[in-house]
Length: 210
Length: 210
DNA sequence: TAGATTGTTAATCGATTAACAATC
DNA sequence: TAGATTGTTAATCGATTAACAATC
Image 1 (cartoon, chains in turn orange, purple, cyan, brown):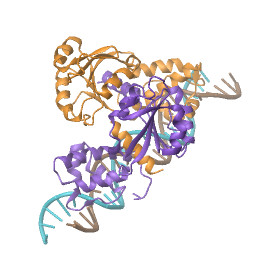
Image 2: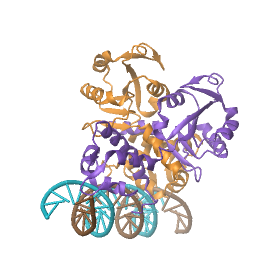
Image 3: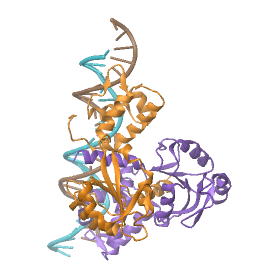
Image 4: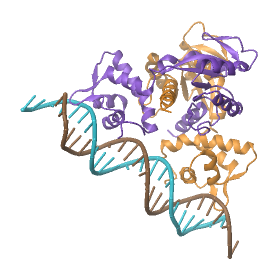
């Protein structure tokens, strides 16, 4: 397994879950853990945990296991959550407002620095300590504050036009809550999508096939 | 590939996305499509599409392709979205309110029939046409209305206690927005989780490794 | 019929699990 | 040293892709 790159998406997607469990262990005062014990708690195999971690380096110690705090910090660094990136949110509707208020951005490697909407009723309102700005101000704001990413909480139809515009303004990643399939639109742009209705339909399937 | 069951989770998770693309095709008036053309639009291989669909049956016609409307309806049936199930939402905070208002439940196989919270400020308030009920009323409500599933928008710490209670009340599935790892808690209970901070950290990783 | 495209089997690829030597 | 547990290689398993005969 090459230490450098070529990490599979499956591995990456498991890292935040490791982090969650390690945080709980930290809180409960557990300082070391074996892959066997962690696997048991997370419903994984010890092999998988060791394979996953060894994609990035040898974080354990033979005969001892893993130091919880050290491992927690290392995984945090791998995810880049120690590198706080500025992010803006587009679309301060129901969902946009909730996402703006709900998330602890700093915990996850971001700082929310601006909210934008085009509806006159929303513009000027305070949402979680930030004022909702007119979309008209987007260009000037981005030139000045250089956000790295944008959270899209706008309707599907508006996405391609807005995302093109944002890429032009230097945005390097999207957290996409729309139904629009943004994943394969750009090269060199990170896209992470949350398709809530896909998730709800998956639940429907499972309920109907219990 | 057995037509009956043993469908892998990877396949299930792709079905809602097929549905989204088919809906767009329908809207644009396209009545038939080949696996090749659909694959091209979805950034998949034609093989994968044919394999996926043939887990459930032969929906296509040799030499012709697939009838868009028929395929759309069949995938909908597989996902069970034609079978509307009653669902309740627990936790009418920022996120809970947004999820209550935002989703088109009927489109995804559900009907939202009740909202619950334990905060005196929220109880009695109207959220998207439903009144927020006191958690005290949960037992009576469930006995009367028999919700099939519950949406959890409550803090991590409260989840195990509340979910145990709901399972006791006959809830068969959870749409879990909390940080609590519910996936392996119960047998015979469907769990679909939306871990927003996991998703945000994944974006952080990708941005830091462009 | 000839052309197109499926359904399905076979081949490949990648991810997970098992095994074990290295080493604390 | 003996016991534990990692890091890593090898084996297995599952998912994706390719190929092609069936058939519209």
